[in-house]
Length: 419
Image 1 (cartoon, rainbow, N blue to C red):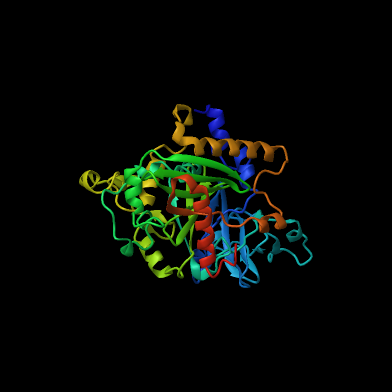
Image 2 (image 1 turned 120 degrees about the vertical axis):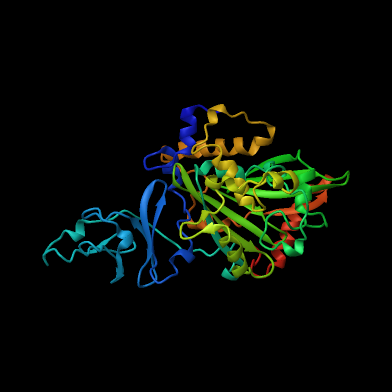
């Protein structure tokens, strides 16, 4: 367990906090491209306790700047997109994507007020996917969770909970399971992932340090000769990469809105056929309310809890969508989990490893040192996408098995080019 001070040290990310200072050194998802694709590409966002506005100007450039106009504090989310920037509707002050003041039109012609104004801003880049995948093979989505970001990140690197929280009492036909988690069969077998998670609840967990964070290898021995091998990854500071199915991986970030709310951002990457974006979007829009991506099942309606379902169909009784399961687990810990009362076990070794890595990076950042994954362009280019495998391999050679399987998966993906 942690002390209250240690808990705040790693959980709180607002302006001026140690963890907040660290997290602002990394690129973070701020919005989906879909959110800025309409007739008016301007959207207020809250990130790390800061009120901001993200927009696309009339030249197609993206900007992320402070939401309150530095003139009199009015809301730039209602501003006008014109003349290469975002113009405040109150007195016409104009700001470009870098927060530079371009015009103060009510001031005298010889005024130098504009030259001395700089609105808070953060750089923005558009990336359709990771692992150097083309847009045709990726799909991005998000969802709001009503608690601290760290709770969700720690669930994502907890390989044991899948045997309980995401347990299904029957196995679905994999041919009908497109876009769903744990509903495919494991590689090199006809065994459904859902059956493996249900029947083998005491896995062996290996945590291997890497240059991007650490790799998790979870082993569930299914016979004397064979073991289930699941390879997932912690990508520091606040993302993880996991296999969703034989062909598809998920790269997921947990990004603070403030200390008591956050968004998960997921990029689904296919190593096989192009992603059916329309179907992936349709499935998820049945579960979330736009424009804020709030889940339909939430604490206000008990996450759709059904006692009959809990007895006969799923471990939670909260439906088949595992995001709802995770959401319940994270939110039920409280707005900010009180880690002074927890008792970690052997199966929590990845949680302990991450907290140690996070504390070390916060301390390094506070001293002006360069923590893990703060990269220059050359170093960034040398790190390729982490492996994400779910398969059945030999007990006595599982390391070689997943490495060969990953290499074969990448070679079969025409877009990967060896990365």
